[in-house]
Structures are given as structure tokens and as C-alpha cells.
Image (cartoon, rainbow, N blue to C red; front, side, top):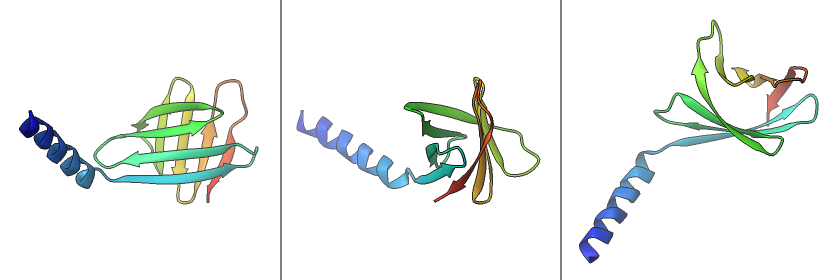
Length: 96
């Protein structure tokens, strides 16, 4: 039993060492704070705003990086991003 627990612990530690996460906070022109998380080796970003969390897959983009799903999109270009939500105006967001 102890060997299984130790083996699991070693796997979790090895995973934590290789998993790199970049967190970025944005403040949008309409006052919306946005938290974004980018995981190494994953083509999705995790986005949190308005009390909801989203996993948005990366989409094709001529410039910058665009993530979108179900009417929500986040298009990043340098230190700025455009947040689009259903039934709301698009808003410009800046990395903090």
C-alpha cells in the first residue's frame, strides 16, 4: 500500500515540474476584470470573468492568438486583447 502511494506521489511531483502555467490578469475598458491561464502543451486557455470559467480552444488567426467557443472569444495581440461575449459589445482589455 505504501509503494502505491509513493508511486502516485512521484508521478504527481513529476507532473507538477513539467506543467507550466502562465497566469495573466486583464482589465477591460468596460470595467470587466479577466483572469487568463495558459498551460504548456495545451491549445486551450482558461478564462474567468463575470463569475464564469471557460476553456476556450485556440482558433486560426492571421495575427495574435485567438481563442473562441460558444459565442465567447478572446483575441490577444501583444499586451491587449479583445473580449467578445454574446449579447454584449466587444471590449478592449489590457494586461496588468
